[in-house]
Length: 257
Image: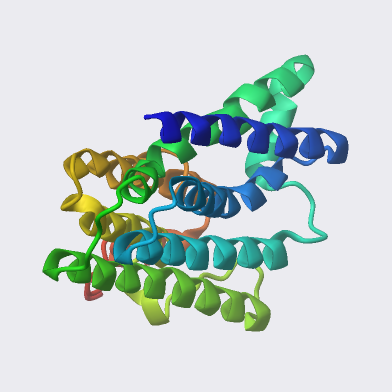
């Protein structure tokens, strides 16, 4: 509990710094840069602070670092030099004079709280001084690899499609995107289910299920899938694509008549 409290203080300071930078830059999209790096910070801090260097702590810290650094680099390349993301730009207009206050609590502090909830298995795992890898941990690692594959490959396929498409509003329907409309989001949720399995055998590890449940709920029902689906609601090509393609879980597309 002490290590988790220290992580909470660390996240508060970390997100406050990102808030100050975003306020100066007048671009709340900056918070997206901090998402992946925040988990890396929590993982590395909890590992060093506990001093528990065993197979499970090193595995979880390593895969979180790989994922978080890759995500940061991906978002940096995608957003650098571009205006504020449409989601934050919309809130900027709607919040008016309350923009700074609401951004602090509803964007930065809220993401910090969610980060702490999702990172719970990391801190729990790194607080234990006994951690050998067995069958369930191996299965969890394989699940994590599957999720990482979907996120990385999905992002790469989308990036290549955007670079070569002839019409700005055209929709990617090939590769992993043929089987799910959101392979990158599916991949992110799957990775946290993998981490949960790795941590499950740890004492009180069952409580780590709060992490994949939270990220899955957020991606499917709150900030991930719904916002993008709403963004394309007037795109006829996307609506046709959506009628044939699985929303989240990968599956074979429906046959057209």
